[in-house]
Image (cartoon, rainbow, N blue to C red; front, side):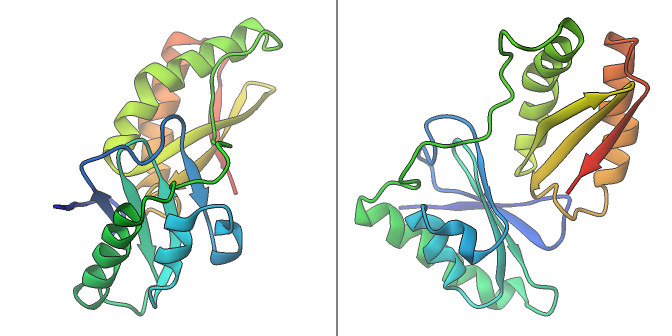
Length: 183
C-alpha cells in the first residue's frame, strides 16, 4: 500500500492520501482522542505521540501535530497507523454520522443559497488542502462557519474566510454582510 502525503497551508497539519475511500460520504473531525471513540482509524492515530487532531474526508486523512513535535519523527508512525488500519479491514467510522451541509426543506431561501455555494464552490477547494468548512448558522447578515481539519488553527484561515469565502458569498447572496468562524 502506497500512501501519499501533501503539505497543507497549516504547517502543523499534513494530509495523507491512502489511495482508497476513507469515508463514503461527508467528513468527520476529531478534535481530541476522547472524541475518536467511534473511529478505529482515528483511535490508532491518536496513539501516535504528538497527534492532536484527526480529520477524515472522502479519500484523505488530515493529522495535526502538537507544536513541540517534528513531522520528521512523527510521519513514519502516522503512515504506519494508517496502513495498519486499512489492512485490518475495520471501518474508518463505526457509525456514519458525518458533517453535511446539504440543503434541507426547513432552510429558508437565503440559507439554501449559502449551503449550495458552500457545497459546490467552497468545500471542494478547501478539501484539497485537507480541511472542510461546515455551515453553522446565518443571523443578521452574518454567516457563521465551523472550520475543520487543516483549516482549524491554520494561520491563513482568517484570510480564507474574509478574502475568499466572504467575497464569494457576498457576490452571490447580497443579504450576506460578513462571515465569521465558530469554535
